[in-house]
Amino acid sequence: MKKLDRRDFLKKTSLASAALGASAFYPEYLYGQSERKQAATYMGDFAAPSIENVRAAFIGVGARGGYHLKFLAALPGTEVVAISDLYEDLVKEKVTWVREVSDESRHQNIKLYWGAEDKWKTMLAEVRPDVVFIATNWANHAPMAIESMKMGAHAMVEVPIALTLQEMWDIVDTSEASKKHCMMLENVNYGRDELLFLNMCRKGVIGELLHAEAAYIHELRWQMEEQERGTGSWRTYHYANRNGNLYPTHGLGPVAQYMNLGRSEDSFGSLVSFSTPSMGRKKFAEKNYPEDHKWNQLTFKGGDLNTSIVKTHLGRTVMIQWDETSPRPYSRLNLIQGSKGTLAGFPTRVALEGGVLGLTKDHHSWVQGEQLEVLYEKYDHPLYKRLNQTAAGSGHGGMDGIMVYRIVECLQKGLPLDQNVYEGCFWSAVSPLSERSVASGGAPQPFPDFTRGNWKDTQPLQIVT
Image (cartoon, rainbow, N blue to C red; front, side, top):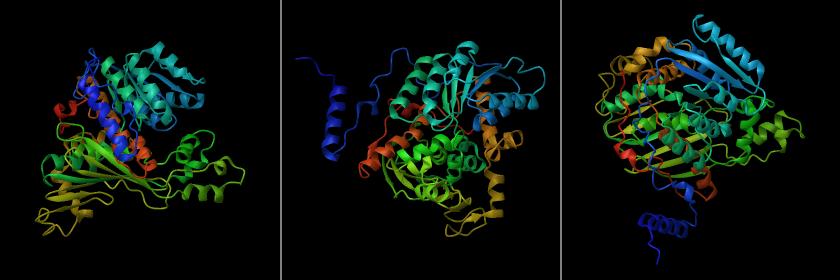
């Protein structure tokens, strides 16, 4: 009888049990390859060789990518070597942006690519940049990141890092094989309050961490006006055809780093997810467009609000909500609850057992508003203190600039990036897993372990100065 590998046996029997017990089939790609390839390198704490002059290329400069380019071009030790987009006007406009923020000694030979869908591949082959910033539609994120790494460049990818679990495994395998970083550009992790909360959590101010709440609640129906080009022209079809949490990382990224999820302390276990009925997009289309308009030909399967709950290996919980349809104020929730107190966002509030620095007498009252200045003075993250003036005006309250600055700084100094490839995949995996859970009536979905067990030996994100 052929010898049966124990790992394969356990995997197959576990899958069979899950399928029988929960009436669900978990495909093999959920678990990826059981072993890391022999020549591959674990990227959790990986530090690439330092690059004195960072040669950067950009794919997609219509919105986010253009601002990343403009801020990077102003940083010393950088060179914009190529810009690629479908549209000629966007490419040429961004060249003028580079000239506005830099002197004449740099960015002299910027190669420009536009037109065909595959021009970005020509760019990678001809220019061979050190790093590529990718800010295109979601479906292109994974293939562009993978090809960039294969061509010898570090890949910086807008959120989400990929759409499917298989794509995420492919990104992980390519990063490990090429020894190139692939970082998802989660800018919210660099917001002032998010950095403040991270610092307070690391200092033990709220004790042992128990629960977090994250969200992306942002009414964006107006994007449906972008029908030929722009975000709405492709994102609207995601709302119509998918039912789950399609945009989890802005809320999840910060709280996951507060909790050290995927790093030494704890990691993602399983997820359950539920969606409300789908009403808002259909009603908006009926109200604002003719009956025969293409938006009125869509079914809009995705619920207006999705709520997902993650259970971690340690038994902690994370609630993640998503709603880009309902008429309500913007919120990312950004709540982290510990055994000694709670930090919460939108608006920013702090409550601690025994009171907060003489401002409150107990945990029944929030410190908020002008009272927060005392907490900023005491606990502002040193990275924010160092870079907030440099990043001012870069977008989203300076968080975009701090993020790009840190990427360049880490590449120049040969330091590990603040967000590793596995975190980008864990955070993005909420989308396909939530879709699977919703489709199965809320059945729990296990997270793939993109680290293949190495998260237990990965260092927590340090409080960098």
